[in-house]
Length: 117
Image (tube, rainbow, N blue to C red; front, side, top):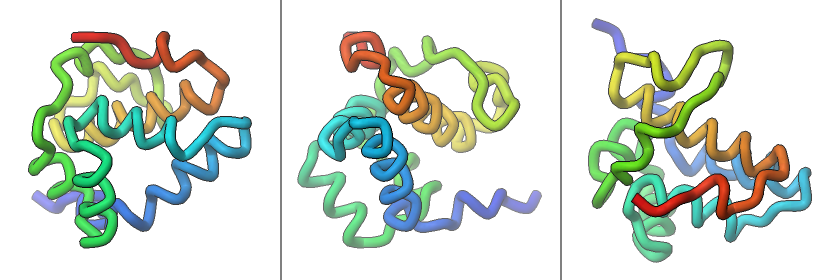
């Protein structure tokens, strides 16, 4: 089976697009980082290390310290596909992140985007 090209794409190449999307809607890099850390279990220092290493998406999620158990509660559509219906685990993790960043860019409060597991 051929892997989707996003799996081999460097997370650090896409990360600035997440930040730009948020900042265009008056949100901050700090909020983007908070979302990423909430989802993956990386702390800020570990996240920055992954960015510096140019870790690919597949490795970024595979090596995540502790994927948030509440992530399975994330619902909605990204790129025309319901995130809860995605069967491939790595793609689902990527789309969970996309959905959370979309919610941030739509102006949703951080307390409503992130919740305790």
